[in-house]
Length: 221
Image (tube, rainbow, N blue to C red; front, side):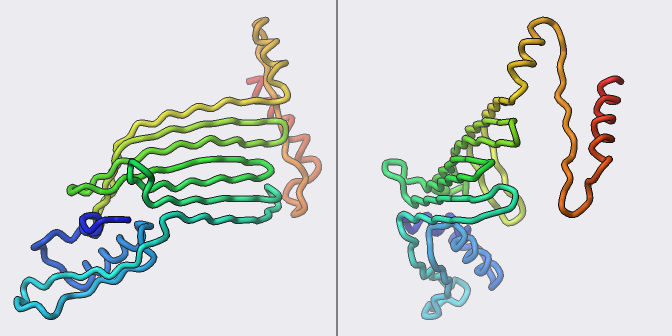
């Protein structure tokens, strides 16, 4: 679990710096939101002899080394939905924190993971992450992937990140083979769409015809 130096670096209370109640509350919140602790409480060592140099005592309770959260839900847009979240607070060899998430829904499926290192003395930490995702809308399907890595730091006024990121996406649809066939012959194609009637009455006849007419007019010009 996190060392004493991690607690000091993440709280951002350097030895010898001035502090007040608000500074202590902010440091306490930073430690609590790090994910490494279930509870955090900062107090002052009132037994010290020098009132101008009172030590800060951190009372913490470590979070479990690993945690799994399962979620089940249902929405009118995507139907049934299952999510699985896994957190590992100290990965073997690296010692980094890993947060991974799997989502399975009717129209969207995704798998992603985010790894973050322990902040150094300057407050900077390394991070890396990856995600693969599939989105389906009718007969149209988008498969995408993202890989990112870099370093970041957070201060009281600004968060900074420097990273490299690679994105890739591939589209598949019912009309894709037909469009590719025409394209090889030098013929351009377009697939138009129109709004569907909804239960609220915001889209109704003849809105569908107008949508198609507007699409043809846009293509013509």
